[in-house]
Length: 388
Ligand SMILES: Cc1ncc(COP(=O)(O)O)c(C=O)c1O
Image (cartoon, rainbow, N blue to C red; front, side, top):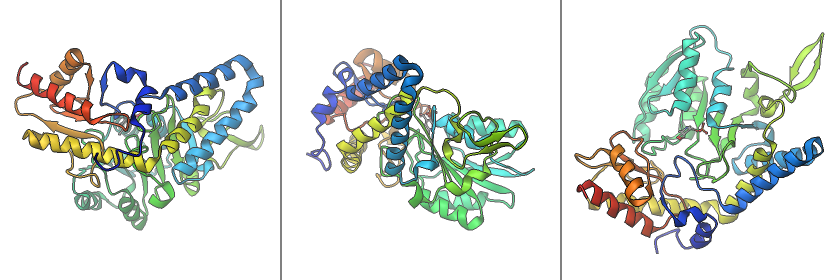
């Protein structure tokens, strides 16, 4: 048995995800599979909230604040630095649309971003709020740092990039990037949609300013569970366009609105309380399995995928190791269109991978996947690649 695979009850994880009996699902990088106890918690929290009208508000609010505490502790933050967004994209927008830029300010953004970053930032550029400059993310962390260093100008205010790039799973040297930014007087926004739940992420240790993520991929939480982190002393840099009940410390007709000094000031008005309340259940379940054991298992599964790719002389497009990469492992096969291949894999073998690497194929297994499933997926890929 390979390292890290023996401390997790994989059979239980699979029984709790009955759909895994009918499909080979190796696409957690797009969406994780939620365990039945968490589905039950979501339904129960939602039922309670919807059944009780306003009477349900206080108990639900308590659960949401408990969720905030649990998530903050898990991510090395304080609860008042955590906001609950609908998704990672919304958290990116909270930063992009409200950061107090001066005329001609620049954001240095990577060329390897998801539309979650590209669209909000391009839109801010279209609106004349900021100019974008771009840099390349390399498999070599030192080269990525150098590219960032080279891209900084006297107008740069912020560096924005994914902690783990989504196509090939490239992990950037986040702490070093934050240190570089700090020494240059800049702030950093990391998109961690592909990070939290894969390996330990500690916002305070990273010394990051803003972080956007979600719980529906690697944490196996429900949809609608976006995460927004704003370092306490950076909140004043966000001049948010939208406010409402919940955003304010005080308000009166003469004195105006005084916003709270907490990251949850973006969560105004009535919301899907049952969803936010389930974040605590999600994180507690993840912690009960063991984040270190999960990381070890992901590392082992990813190493096995790299080995199988090498054995077939296919072309690995992801970094060669865990430290520079992640459980998102991509490759290309000569003369084979990855997009067509993934479609055929779904249709003929009930196997779910992603082809969003363009001409390649991306595996993103989680702790609930087995070596046997991965073997089967490779056999099916071989068969289809050979025209079978
Ligand atoms: C790097 C990255 N950022 C953001 C997202 C989108 O996240 P959300 O749907 O929570 O906005 C994804 C989804 O694949 C992603 O890979």
